[in-house]
Length: 148
Image (tube, rainbow, N blue to C red; front, side, top):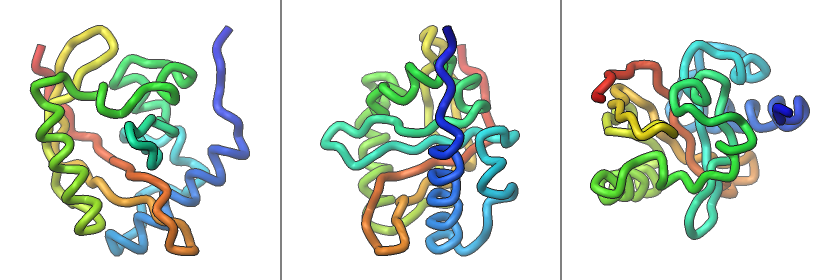
């Protein structure tokens, strides 16, 4: 049985991602917030846990990484990179925490089946709600290079 995300959550979280992107990056995401789940680019976010766990992955991201929704939203986000790339990923997230966003990130990621790919020209930003509370971090990308 396939587990699908709650439509109310998708609308609310999509609005949060789009609003924080607009405030931090200074421009709108190219599709309306209620269409982000079916957008033609990968969009993921994780929470603020000590070892952050993905809390959102649109359909495109699920296809790219090879996880279904139920698996993706229980996955520690550090596992989207192999161990050798995790230090670089941690530096990226520290820079995003400090600067608010990075407009042109590139890095190697790993699929569920172990195959590697490089994301290029990703925007990574802090997800901050209207009250100014940090809710996590998000990444949007569509440029992918197969590595293995």
